[in-house]
Image (cartoon, rainbow, N blue to C red; front, side, top):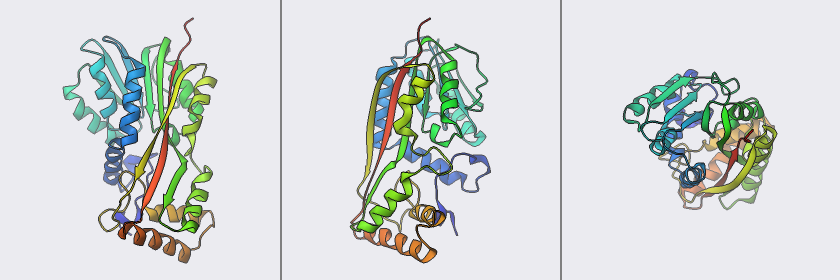
Length: 281
């Protein structure tokens, strides 16, 4: 199979993935989602970063979100981006040449940050917790490095909200079943963000959601809707949980692709966001 046939989104080991360029392209596409743009604007408004403050971005990926927020920190501020992928960080460092403030991008473990306690005015993590083996430990680490009164922004997807309409009720039900339960990763962590922050000892100030909607997709031009996984990858999940056999998986993919070609494709996915603050002691 070619990367076009097997495009699934998996960011646990980007550097070892033979389809790393596909993953990077999907990450860039996800950053262009209307839902992502809406939540980043909401985040910026409520983080209220000030000149001279420090910001930590865990799971910074290609660095575009952190570098955009750097504009609010002024020349005396500091941005630190942490990611597990050297491939991603190489791109982030290239982009940092024109950063509004000093920016450092380093390889790190979101579950054991190599940063001092109470050392950042603000921290963020976007679409990262779903890839961690222990999201609560990840949020605990973010809370640990916040100064008293420091602000935390969490943004993540909840894949259990995925809805697919191709004019076939059986397909829609199969998609809901495939994404209902978490298998192997915290794919539905979005709706738990507030609870994770509270357990970490933070005070939740605000929560919101944004829904990404796709109304068109041509499977002959792209293996997947913009920034999403392929329908073949979704079918493989159904096979892995014994909800479909291989023949059924082929019919599943063909039904979706044919509907999309004929202009009968709609899909939606909800992202969640939280702003929390560290207690002042």
